[in-house]
Length: 348
Image (tube, rainbow, N blue to C red):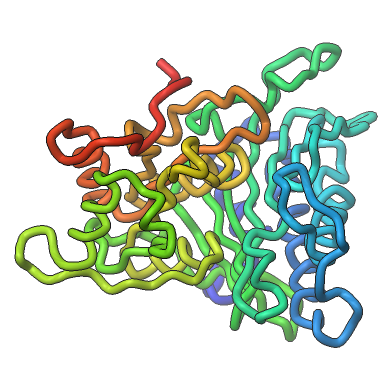
């Protein structure tokens, strides 16, 4: 067995493929495509201040958010390089209003890929860590009948999920349902090398991450949850507050150190702000495979059945004990009042 520090992402995925003797290799090559796209995006992120790629395009995306130049670039790279071998039949991006059908020609077209090409892009000009989030579903329809229903699957059906964080180093983190593994990009050789094998999130959080500027817009129950996280749930002292404002960066830190990320509903966004398909479901799969948990405030994120490709959801994500406590508190009618979470469209 080679030294794990010399094991690149493709080799590690191939090693795991041996657990499935009937595998065709399409799934492995698809993850390799995503890793390659991430390298291309990382190259532009690290030299963004040297070329004309900072700032906005002046346009807005389907979410009503200002599109950054790097958003456009990352979106184009994902569409160009992912599924090059005909493994993909359908792709959906947070930046696009509609899914994109892929001409897979002689390939199998077995998979559907969903991605947020550049999460946290509003932080680009400030040189704050940003990331790419992706997830992979298996096609359910016959080839001749591929449709949006192939996208609208609950997170429990995910074949894989992952993210790339572009920070002081570039890390690729993914799960295929058999542990969570992290790879760090070695710029000297241009390879993602295995650096964090079988990541486990601490059971209880020591960090909470939430935009407290939204406190006036929260329900009384959410305000009380955050107050107890801050000052202590049982006279044991409160947690440390850490909030970057880039979901990938906040989640990555909490995954390694033990923490909880909260994006509750507000009076301005009663259904939540984060997207179920592009952000919540893939990170929920990673959290659960690392021993954590993700909830919409009423139940598991992974059980939610999307009703649309840009559906939003509240999100409570991270260390299992802490997120389960939050879910329990929000369900207690005597704890507070108001809209605290989701709970509709759940798989049974």
